[in-house]
Length: 236
Image (cartoon, rainbow, N blue to C red):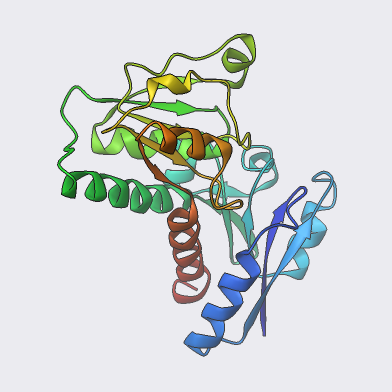
């Protein structure tokens, strides 16, 4: 039996084991997926000796990179890793968060389009955060040619961020209520939170009360997990 897992810190809330183990059973794959909640990465190599592949989550998506043998081109460009595969005993870092966010963004834009709110060439997206998840978001936006800016953690700590000129705001931080001017949301705008638990963060709730479209991170979670399993199972 193959063994896979999620490596992060304070991640008992994660539903990744439920998603992956159900998918393994449905596909007839003899594998199991567990959580490895690590206070730091001191024992990372020891954990990887016990399992055949892993997902990486907050706060290790960038910190884990020096501990890997190599990165795929996508992970190298993004500058963050959320999936690790083993090839001939070597640890290879990849990034399926990009696939996950692309699916989430596609869903959001399609819902908006059906309601008569097509994205325009000059529409701009604000990405909140500068960690591994934010880097995956920016990679996707760059690749499909959507304009964007970033508000870092330090900028949000210094003062309230004005979102008035942005069509969409993506919260790529673990903060459920980032320091932004929520009055900037209105009908026709969109708020995306990469968090899926809780189902509706305070960020999404406030945006919704202003009339904005809101989407949580469940679609992203499921898609990145699907792509990770493909790397582990089908490509090995």
